[in-house]
Length: 242
Image (cartoon, rainbow, N blue to C red):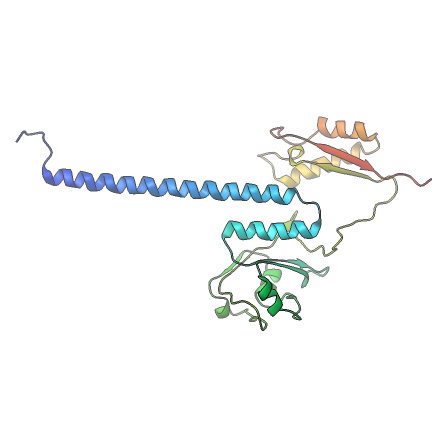
């Protein structure tokens, strides 16, 4: 046998080493594929939510998107009351017709138990066994069996979402200006989104007396974004009384 020829034991060890490396590469590729699928699911969810205009439909879309991302059987979204201490609305998703019928006549949750914990401490809450959690308040008769729980608070500019107005309206005085715009007008990778919104608000206040066309042009000329995304602006102004 030649001196430099690998010994049988060394060849077997090399095969084991290569098999181990290939298994690791395969696992990493599978992880990347799962991450890609989740990112695509998240993108699809954002697009689906952004296409809706009616508030109840948007809220249900948010719940459905969250369920898809974490592969949950049931999901719900609770909207805080004006005091921020309880729930004014509760949007459940995933219940079958039979399960909804079994809960007929039972009022929706008001913010006790784990939901109350999430209201008082708006931080992500994950529970493997609901019944064993010290703050669990149990379920009403007819409620489908649930074991685990994942809850997060939805905040808007740092405040937990608590606007309970079902029509999502806000009265405007005469000669008020409303500006609709895409995120491309304010997004910048080196600054938080709130900084861009604040800068845009200051620009809008400075040029608010201009005509709508000139106002839109001023917002484009002085936009706080990095310009990497498309920009679209729609400005409306309520008429003066005649």
